Image (cartoon, rainbow over the protein chains, first blue to last red):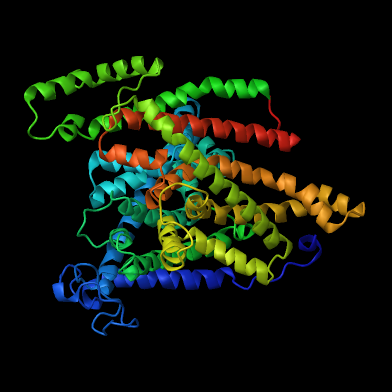
Length: 290
Length: 305
């Protein structure tokens, strides 16, 4: 095998490159989201009957007044995409935080207490792992209704077990390490051991997992919006714009495609950054799958 | 191995019970199906009749027990949308989903393992760089947008393939590609990583020392054991495949269980949703078991009893 006999080449895209490029994209998107009112040329909800479905400026019939064109209600697409980034990023990050909190707590209890706790929590995690998370999310959104808070809750609950597994395995192996045993022998309380010895050790791994999960959450949120289970209609989210555009592919394909492009750029940036981060934390893991 | 399979089959009803119970509770939170199926002009008698038929006047634990009693007899009740037994409604569409998921999975595995091998053999060369980068891009691709792009290119612009629906073999091409792309990037990356890892093992060096050609060693010694991590991954991802099927079936109006679930959930067709969830859960559990057994067959090192 060439792989074993040759000295591995230095990869063209190193972790530094990935983190800079990915981080740059994410930072750009976050800044756009924060300063949306300053950056967006129009009000994203302002309709105009005379300006319906204008193509982007570079296409025939487009005008420089609307760089990316307009949608079926004459709303400026660029402005809607800029404002849409707010909800996509907000829901992505918040649901990641919620599922991280939920899953880490569950994994910590299961790994630290063991016994019956472990049986119940980890069997439940296994069962949910095998079930389609999007189906669970659809069921729950149908039950609770689509608002930003509900979406964050639903997405968080649908993926908590990913953190639970990681934290459970880490807790179990860390508990047997000498410094944790020593602390326990000295009479340290559970709380002390968990906060001072276990959690700090998990931060690097959890950071990597969480970063990559934000990408998944953004994709899940847009998928739910596409299925009509996201935030209610006039709200500017990327999933909503794509969903509205997909019913007008014949006449105005740019609406769906530009929204899709926005989604893939952000998610790719997050994945790039996350992969670079993982190589930094664990150099052996280059380009391993999630 | 048989004992292991038997033990797994014994635990199966327990996890299925969990799934059924959670679905039941969530569905009871979704509001009253009576309100959706009867319009405002319906008489109080009609409301009372449907309420009684669905046992909605009983407390929820009692409802659940009634539901379980019927379930054991294979009776999920009548579908509210189609007025036929709910299980029958689901099973009728199961074939469509299996066809789509099977084709998509096969496509993803064949293409993914081939590309992963190419990456591993020419590690850090141009081919690896291009394929790996595309794989990461593929992980970032919303599958429904890919479906929409395929429709635009092959159906609207070129006119080669139908935009949606089911019929001949031409109908399944675009949905299968869309579904395959959900798993493809990870299959490429896992195959790549696992072939690279196995290439350093003693038995590979021994085989090379015996004088076997590189290609021979790769295909007969490295590839079989490298498939194991891939199988573990696929076992976990069967749920994802099913979820992807819901989205793909919706984009292409493919008549399958996924789209049926989506419409049944929004129509509050509780019996169909319950039957569908159970059928999906059983399918996933059995696939997982099959994957585990297959792994034991391939790699004697992990044979349990």
